[in-house]
Structures are given as structure tokens and as C-alpha cells.
Length: 192
Image (cartoon, rainbow, N blue to C red; front, side):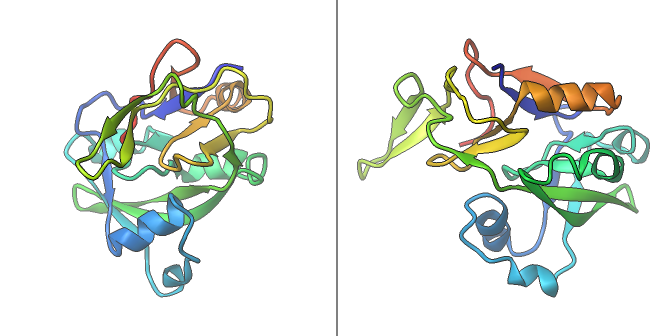
């Protein structure tokens, strides 16, 4: 199985969105899954596009790079593939502000966790002053047998990838998402 990271189709180093409000709660809910998400009942999830996105190019992308380790998909993606991938991801409305206009996208909460998705022996780590090891570069395990569309590593929750099956669904539906293979010969480029 080949594993992939997702990339936006907008080629610009600042093609990133910043999800605002309650940064720790956003991370705890969408990434580490330690928050129950009750804050979303009273919060309108918003994000601000950095200057790599424009009003026209943001609407051509079905995936947006985000400053947190959570996938952000277009309404079109959710309308077409949301039901097919719902076992692996839940979708939450997010209004992305770009050059004075708002557009509806969806932040995905990846809920499928796979043990040893990351090959801990081949990955690179940084050791902090207190002795704690932090994953610096992830190498994904080539022997993943659990079927999935999107999944996170059970221990290193900031790392998530998609499968060949996910890529095939996206391509068959002509959605605008780029894929970067990470198994087994490449290291993950996503943040720590």
C-alpha cells in the first residue's frame, strides 16, 4: 500500500489557512482527540487564508493546506465523497475568509487511528533538554494492513495520511487535490 500526504493544488508557499479561535481546543478536538468538541456548539469555525490564496484560486481547490494537522476540504469534496469516507473522518463547517469574502469549507476530524502507522525505528527524532523525544521526520510503515481512506498514527497523532483507495476515489471524481507519496521511500514533510 502506498500512503500519501495531501497538498493543495494552489502552488504558492503561502497557500495556507489559519483556523482561528480557541487554538488549544481546535488542536485538542481535531488532532489529539482529547476534547469533546462542545465548544463547537457555540462557536462558528472560521479560518483566514494567507496571501497564497486568492478569491479565484481558493475556489478551484478541493483541499486546503492548514496551519494545524487537520484536513480541510471543499463543499464539493464533502458532497461527492463525504458519505464514502465517513467511517474515517467527520466534517465540520468552516468559513474561510479570503480577500474580504467568505467561502464554506469543511475541517475534517480524522477518527481512524492505526497503531504503528509510523515506523518508529526508521523515523528521526529530536531530543529536548528534559529528555523528551519529539518526532522530527516520520517514515511510514510499509506493512500497514488495516484498510482505510484517511488515518492517523495512534501514538503520533499529528501525523495523518491517505491511502491508494482514497487517491483513486479523488481521481475518479476529478477533484482538485494533489498527492505526495510518503511510503516507503520518502519521509513525511508535515509538521511535528
